[in-house]
Image 1 (cartoon, rainbow, N blue to C red):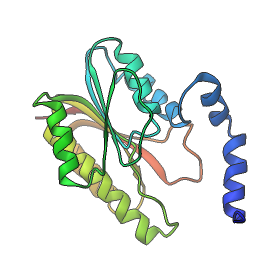
Image 2: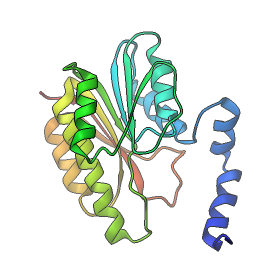
Image 3: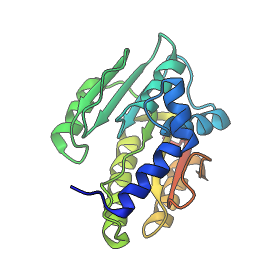
Image 4: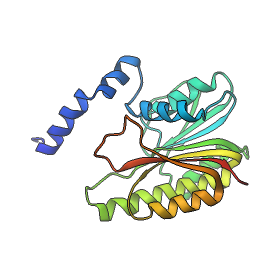
Length: 206
């Protein structure tokens, strides 16, 4: 089947992308690693011994970074609806985070232990229609937000991908009530035309 012009253009852009080339050369699983690294360098979110939950983890570059920076201590629990090739020292749950049974599996894996950092790079399959994509995206953000509210320790941090649009301002307002500091960032590795930004909420109040 012939590729559409848009998909051919995307492939050409993808393989000429300097971040894609660098990720491949350095052994990372995707270019998304450089988004996280920029955020981590600025805010020093990861420290040895922490418990980290990575939502929407596949193909696994964020979990790779988390595991590397935690050293031999701490835990990384990754979850995605897509299969992910194993990473040493990372516990992986395959399933749809929107389903109660999958959430219960994640809670069981934690065993009542509080989380230090919740990462979410979850995004729906995009249709290209904002009226469809934005509500789907915000639903995933809200689920991650709710999980962080329940499972983060006091003082913990929550980092989530979010698309600017309907529901964005309400999210920021909610986070500012629950966390001491909220920042909106667009890492250099995010494509300029993408509406994605990252909301970083640190210092969970209680």
